[in-house]
Image 1 (tube, rainbow, N blue to C red):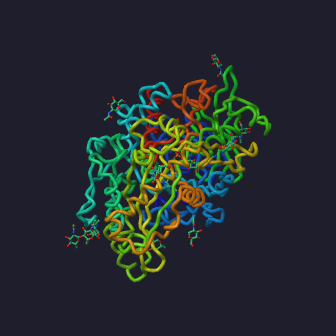
Image 2 (cartoon, protein in one colour):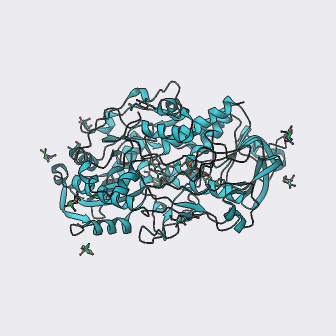
Length: 610
Ligand SMILES: Cc1cc2nc3c(=O)[nH]c(=O)nc-3n(C[C@H](O)[C@H](O)[C@H](O)COP(=O)(O)OP(=O)(O)OC[C@H]3O[C@@H](n4cnc5c(N)ncnc54)[C@H](O)[C@@H]3O)c2cc1C
Ligand SMILES: *[C@@H]1O[C@H](CO)[C@@H](O)[C@H](O)[C@H]1NC(C)=O
Ligand SMILES: *[C@@H]1O[C@H](CO)[C@@H](O)[C@H](O)[C@H]1NC(C)=O
Ligand SMILES: *[C@@H]1O[C@H](CO)[C@@H](O)[C@H](O)[C@H]1NC(C)=O
Ligand SMILES: *[C@@H]1O[C@H](CO)[C@@H](O)[C@H](O)[C@H]1NC(C)=O
Ligand SMILES: *[C@@H]1O[C@H](CO)[C@@H](O)[C@H](O)[C@H]1NC(C)=O
Ligand SMILES: *[C@@H]1O[C@H](CO)[C@@H](O)[C@H](O)[C@H]1NC(C)=O
Ligand SMILES: *[C@@H]1O[C@H](CO)[C@@H](O)[C@H](O)[C@H]1NC(C)=O
Ligand SMILES: *[C@@H]1O[C@H](CO)[C@@H](O)[C@H](O)[C@H]1NC(C)=O
Ligand SMILES: *[C@@H]1O[C@H](CO)[C@@H](O)[C@H](O)[C@H]1NC(C)=O
Ligand SMILES: *[C@@H]1O[C@H](CO)[C@@H](O)[C@H](O)[C@H]1NC(C)=O
């Protein structure tokens, strides 16, 4: 009855008495088109954005501006069911990828000169949850040396792993492995329980898959055979190099559904705070008031063409992701002077670093036909779909309930790095000793014919090529111009060939030979010279969607520095960048754990200054 009554109210009466902050009744959603003001305005309801908005909303009035909507509606179960997440069609990298404009920004890169001049579709979540709503759910942290380097680079020792651990712990709730559902004795999980603390941690759900892919158990064995033993502490305690592990995943094990910043942080904040959400609303410019130093005073926004202003009494926080955060800064007057002037944008802060220093990891695969079942093969078998769906829906188990789940990391072993040029050796010497240069990922996919294709992927986790993001106009309605700069550094090319050889060594172990059928399918046994291997890698590799560092944190005056160690943009007041773009460099491996941590940390910095 109550619901019926409130539904019959007219639109006008839905607008609450406080016209500066009007909210759709009984919701967390603002009235589009009505100017409003808040203490904090967060641009981007993605991974970092929803974390920092939720935490600030505990003590202040906060608005989140998000260009997308709800992926559960816009993309059905494709983004919710773990196994389907891997096969979302729009993740394809070719220019003619299947479009999903309700979920993805549809960015296409400039031709990659180091990678066959291909123009790459680089998916980025356009939805509440951002890229945490489309990622492949691996959750792990960087290394002790990584964060020590971060601390030294920005001159702030609060970034060492021991000091950051509290924020990793604060963001995540860990569920131990369910061995009954995993139903195998050869995929035992090892971890250090002190890396988590559920008494104070959450709301992000972190767990191990409720099913183990038999093909992956063999690929794990192959990787162990080339010298990558199971990590004694797992990948959440500051150590990665030289080990493999069944990795933690951002899956809520109760129903085996994706845990994103939307299902975790936003869902909780809607219930417990006054957080106000502006879905389907794009920020078009950061506004400044000028009183000596420019101060961010709010943002111009557009809800499907309806334009209005959201003011920030205290701060604007940009969390629009690695490509759109630098774009928004540039169209608002913060960036390289020459670029801004070329598009008639008045310069607010001349910062050369905005859009530079793009780090991206590069991935390629070696593939065999194998004789083991796999997630991909089982899901392609029509005859057993009913049973698999039942297992998933009734028991949150079986192949639908998880994704891959096994990763390994290492520095290139001496036998292969001995042949690196002196330049490559010197370039690699920048990285701390515990920062892995290679990651290996084993997966099993359908061969389209009832069987399994096994793939061992090699990833450059210490990339030395740098790309960039720039603009082609002064408007956010034009896409940012993105260049990953893949394999433009000769060092990356040498390391990639070494990684390829390690993948081939893994396929040549007795463990792998036990499951392979026939000879190497991709790239094939005739690809043997370094030149042919490199050619294969350049023409066939792709992103693993870990681009970062285009609004890099650094010391004032450093060439690439855009924000200080409190994420404040240099040269203006009241403006921070809090997302993966603000990392000084890419994390080794998968970054999302660090993105959640970072947003928790900066929320704490802001709250402790109030
Ligand atoms: C396909 C894919 C797979 C991945 N797999 C993994 C993995 O397995 N493990 C892992 O750790 N990491 C993975 N990553 C990387 C990880 O998910 C991202 O690094 C991380 O989510 C980035 O968080 P963010 O807050 O920086 O940006 P995002 O989460 O992308 O958030 C940016 C948000 O800003 C919004 N936005 C942008 N511009 C505007 C504007 N002008 N106005 C309003 N809103 C705007 C966007 O719509 C988006 O919601 C993957 C990423 C992708 C894309
Ligand atoms: C996904 O949704 C479709 C359409 O509603 C349904 O037929 C299918 O069973 C769902 N799959 C899973 C794994 O839930
Ligand atoms: C981790 O890093 C700290 C400095 O940040 C160092 O003192 C400590 O020895 C390192 N621990 C390990 C296990 O490497
Ligand atoms: C796997 O499941 C079957 C059927 O329920 C059971 O008999 C078997 O003991 C389980 N094995 C393990 C290792 O859990
Ligand atoms: C691990 O156990 C599973 C289930 O019993 C089996 O299918 C798979 O072949 C085993 N893998 C290895 C490497 O022994
Ligand atoms: C302008 O700056 C001065 C000095 O910092 C300050 O006292 C004053 O309140 C500011 N005015 C506005 C409108 O912000
Ligand atoms: C909203 O704010 C903008 C900028 O301050 C102003 O130009 C516009 O008139 C305002 N609109 C309304 C309806 O008050
Ligand atoms: C290293 O270079 C030498 C000399 O060119 C060559 O014989 C050897 O095979 C190379 N080793 C590797 C691992 O590529
Ligand atoms: C962007 O990076 C590419 C590749 O490294 C380089 O050629 C280009 O000059 C860079 N552009 C800018 C604006 O820095
Ligand atoms: C190969 O498979 C057989 C049968 O499952 C097993 O006995 C043997 O140990 C396996 N070999 C390796 C190297 O894993
Ligand atoms: C390897 O053989 C395949 C199939 O015949 C051919 O397409 C490819 O060009 C060959 N590659 C090299 C490096 O010889």
